Amino acid sequence: MGIPDRIILTLYTFLMAVVAVLVVLCSLGIISQAAINQFLATIPGNWEYAVGGIIILLVSLRLLIAGIGATGISSLILKTSDAGKIFVGKNAIEDYISEIAQEVYGVYNVKCETKLDDENISVRINASIEPGINIPETTEEIKYNVRDTIKKVLGMEIKDIELFFKQIKAKN
Image (cartoon, rainbow, N blue to C red; front, side, top):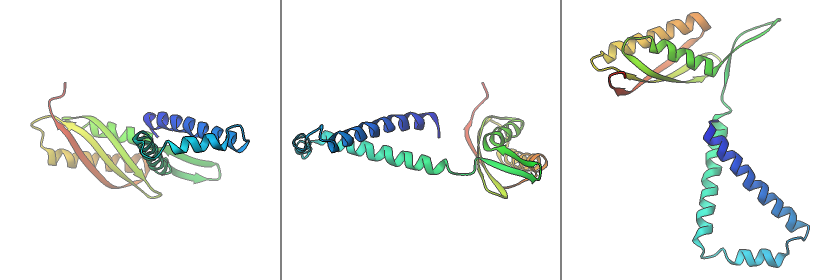
């Protein structure tokens, strides 16, 4: 979960805490039912409440999606023995693959996303490439280097590699 999602989650949690306090106050009789009915009577025909409800619904869906995405595999178990397990984190793998791809001539600003399962790694590489570089040859070189290096270092097979060149522009 990224920083913007964490900020949204914090604000949403605060909002839910306020709602919980109001429910407790209502159930204890501190806030009367007449006050609740009076508030509820102002809602129909008031578009501000509709907008607020839509915003809360969208935030809820966003947090739900972010939460589902966060449940994926975040590390690989490379070896298990009586002495323990060897783990490699998803971020470490992504950073390493980015470095491998960036070593290819003419490729820069490399970012990598991986999907891990028990036996394979799927990779998406986003990068920029300098003008005049042969894209098909460079793509094959990146794929070969990544597959070969990851096989040697981690002992894992790369299921598929997807490359996306977001810019064809001279490196600054």
